[in-house]
Length: 260
Image 1: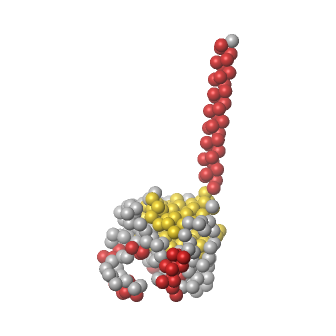
Image 2: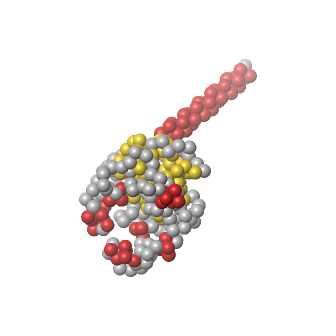
Image 3: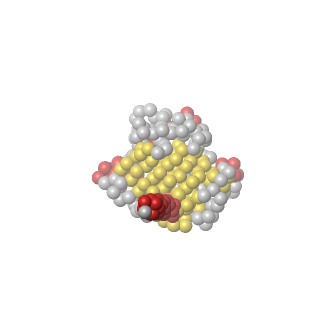
């Protein structure tokens, strides 16, 4: 009799274990299914020029990475813009994840809620998660006149906080106490989480920017800085994901997005 009871208890335990395993596996599968892969290292399907039909010269896949090759890009007789978008779908509330690296002196950015408007640059329409070589950029580029134009009065030859990596460009500076940026040539990970209640910018696993879109503080920053004369800046609440060309090599991989 005892042997029968022990056998039944073992069977119940085994079923419970299998049930838990199925639940965990089901959750993992669901999480994987929630992500939309924008770039998997094998194809540029869905990607094209902003206001264009195909990728501009220079944007290619190399070693499983989406990269802007300046030699290819600058050699072509091409007059269109070189910023690119994932044009297969527009996104509203989302979590975007990607990995990237820059060369010494490199500069790029990630756009979201980007509408396509003929004749207009993405930079005056969409918020930008800044990507730049914080350490070396100022020593390789003259920032003085630009910073003066922006109303800065100190350290005009240096990157301002609102220009540094992971900042909401010209709006919300990245919290430098949380910024842990890998050296040029090494991979970094970034995440943008957008909801109407709060926006978060992540860098290498840490939140470095947080703000409420459209809040009184947001409006004040928008109307008193670089975007004061850009009436359509961040006006769209749904749009494309874009990657910026700044005549600089740039590498991206593992680009994916989840709708919220």
